Image (cartoon, rainbow, N blue to C red; front, side, top):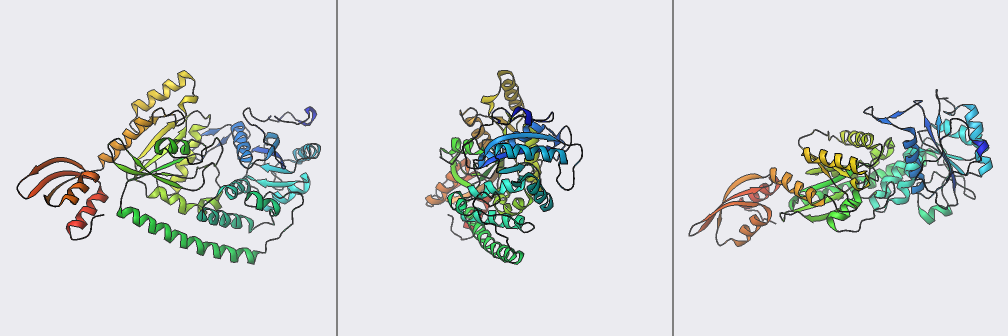
Length: 457
């Protein structure tokens, strides 16, 4: 755990939270969460967040890129100092800690202005990065698809435009990253603003092309319109584990913040035999850098195409309510309000296996009484069948009843109606089948196009 000498800690210190492990790394890190509100931090909805929980989250972010956390602390300050945020006495104390423990990077869990970052680096005599740079570094190391890399690079350049930043050299080639960390033996590179602007223009042009390609893929899916169910939720809520459980896939899933960055889609059969597309998306987080909100909007727009949204929540997390508020705020920014009827949402109360018996019973009882909630353990499979049945029920409720007449000789159309719809009544005469069929709106449109002479795929 913390290797801080006993005499280096003040009364306001907060030892590294339990459960935070250190990883061997060449980069030794100090993690500081600044409690600017004296006693609590709040999400946009006013939900109280414990500073210790925010520190633990910051440590989780640091561990996601294998920083070696040698000291972590909540720093309580009554008033923000414009030059350094912290008071001069606190800055001096951490300079001593950094010197004594040979710390190479200080992570400040808030947004720093370029001036504040430079002042802290001069005083602490080590590289300083803020929450924005840390998250961008994670995204740079994790993005795998061409689009994901373009989005990360655009976000990083937008952030870098206002500051002089060291870049990775040999380390960048080894593990990727967005290039905010710096370190021993690395070159100092000043990115000229004109060069950055040229790169931003080029990246936006490439992303526009990717966006057009994505829209072509969406159009293709509309022609073979399986309903789309999108998984959303706070990072590390268990979305990818649930995705693997339901689809029997092997998408990377780990107890790690931002384990999934690139969207993944798989076809899934519901109990009724209906086929859907399940989409796993990037996890949300509080204070998501504005550069990433803009850069990843194209990826998050997959959620806008969804017929149903599954909001996966970690009900065992102490900040579960605040995490819910953060996710709903991001969805609202995308134009999806939680009560928006056009996009039904189901709350998936995940990780019930981690709850004490009494709390688990309460969550199960809550889910049983609320038609918009289902309790599951993605890891153990508890509740998975109930979730699939709920999806079937919701999608069936959207079906429109249509009376159709089909030539008995047209076996292909009859088979398609049975495969894509729910045949409720059928009466045959010598030449035709007269059916009452429940069809999704998109399938009904496809069927009507066929009746108008177009091909039914």
